[in-house]
Structures are given as C-alpha cells and as structure tokens.
Image 1 (tube, helix red, strand yellow):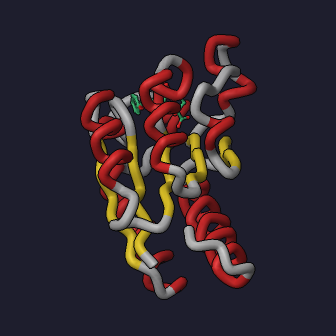
Image 2: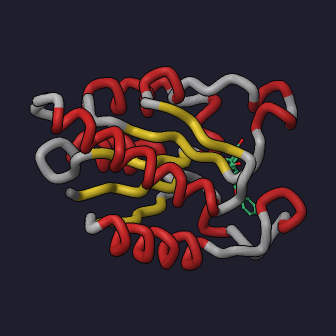
Image 3: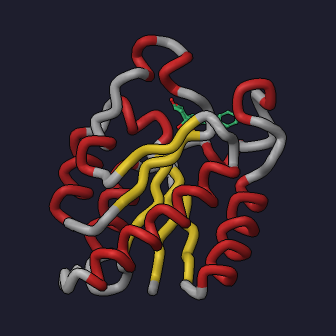
Amino acid sequence: MNILVLNGPNLNLLGRREPDVYGSATLADVEALAARVAAELGVHAECRQSNHEGQLVDWIGQAPGRFDGLVINPAAYTHTSVALRDALAAAALPAVEVHLSNVHARESFRHLSLTAPVCVGQIGGFGIRGYEWAMRALVEHIQSRQQKGHSR
Ligand code: CA2
C-alpha cells in the first residue's frame, strides 16, 4: 500500500516559528514519524510539501494509480481552496485531513474547512502525533474497504 503525505504552505517553517501554536517539531520530524509509522504498518509513505496551490493540485491529480490514499495538511488552503477540494474529489482516493492545531479553538476563519467534506475524516489539535493517527486511520479505512471488495 502506498500513502501520499502532503503538507501545504509554510509547513516548511515548522519548528522554526510560532512554537507556542505549532510545537517545536520540524517538517523533518513529521517525515521521520511518517516513515516509522509506515514501516510499522507495512506500507510505503511518501512525504511532499509545497507552498504552491497548483503544485498540490497536480500531486493530488497524479495520485490515482500511484497511491492508495492521502494524508493531507492543506494548511491555510484548508480554508480557501476550492481547487484543492475539487482535486481531492476528482482523485476519489480516501484522504484524511490533519491539523497540528485545534483549528476550532482558533480564529473563526479557521473553523471552515473546504477540504474536510471530501475527506474520510479530520484530526487536529495533537501536534505532529496527529499525522500518526491519520495514517493509522487511513490504512485501516483502506484495508476495511479492500476486505469489502471495493476496487479503490
Ligand atoms: O494547524 C494546522 O496544522 C494548520 O493547518 C496550520 C496552518 C494554518 O493556516 C491552519 O489554519 C491550521 C499554518 C501552517 C503554517 O505553519 C507554520 C509553522 C510554523 C511557523 C509558521 C507557520
């Protein structure tokens, strides 16, 4: 099983700014965690980060046939991007949305996610551990669908 772990804009700054909001772990720590969890689950995880909406759209569009599902932190695009939502819907791969912070306890503009309705579920508020739970939830979801005979 192949899992694509996507991180959106400014998450390359993780651990270097705003540690009170986002913690002190870095993007490299997220990638190491994803590799460790993938090995434990017996799956392959590929991590990518971009600050560019179109790049994220392209990666999601290229995912069917290469990946079985996605873990995605769309970052600020969560709240603004119809393009990312449409890409996720068109790819029709199971996706789990993850946020480091509890977006519902923050400014009201972060309460709306345009992308969550086209995801299987959303995890937030637990720092980088959320990526681990998102991966576990995604893999279980894909496996249970496979057992029920879904093609994807
Ligand atoms: O809590 C999350 O994971 C967010 O997706 C992070 C986004 C924010 O716009 C969302 O509302 C919630 C911001 C990502 C920027 O990450 C930074 C990390 C360190 C320093 C500055 C920005």
